[in-house]
Image (cartoon, rainbow, N blue to C red; front, side):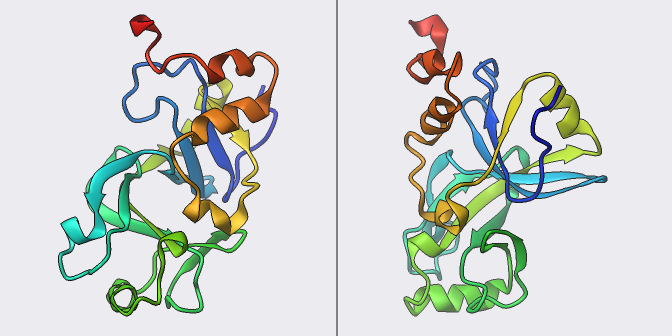
Amino acid sequence: MISVKPKKGNLLIAEPSIIGDLSFNRSVVLLADHNTEGSVGFIMNKPLRYTIHDLIPEINANFRIYNGGPVEQDNLYFIHNIPELIPNSIEISSGIYWGGDFEYTKDLINQGKIKKNNIRFFLGYTGWDSHQLEDELEENSWIVSKNSYANKIIGKSATHFWKEKIMEQGGDYLIWSNAPENPILN
């Protein structure tokens, strides 16, 4: 039984049982949209070795790019907390916005008006068809959690994010917080 129903702005924490799944092992996903047609999210704690400048040389910034998920990994997405600067953004929740005018965003970054803690870029996204996420929740693949960071999540370090969220669950999850990423190597 699902204890908390997912909604836009929630975090999905990968259950420790998701081992060997390269995309979702130890992932924390920000749910950007959730409705009867499906769900979309971005993995918040899987930084890639690229920066925005590596992918778009005309942007003079070293903002890290994250693996947003396995869907459409050849497309760049972004979330931010500055809707007053980026037109055509869509609010996710708690002052977090998705997308907007990218050309204008590039100019603002180059002018130094957008900082690292204002924006996060992703290659790809995580997507679920209608009821697919609910099925995965029933299978205990994910834990639904409120986003207690609100719009500060954009500047949140990815290093120990999954471990912190698992420890917050308490109980039987505490033992998993210190388990090696791949128990076979233990």
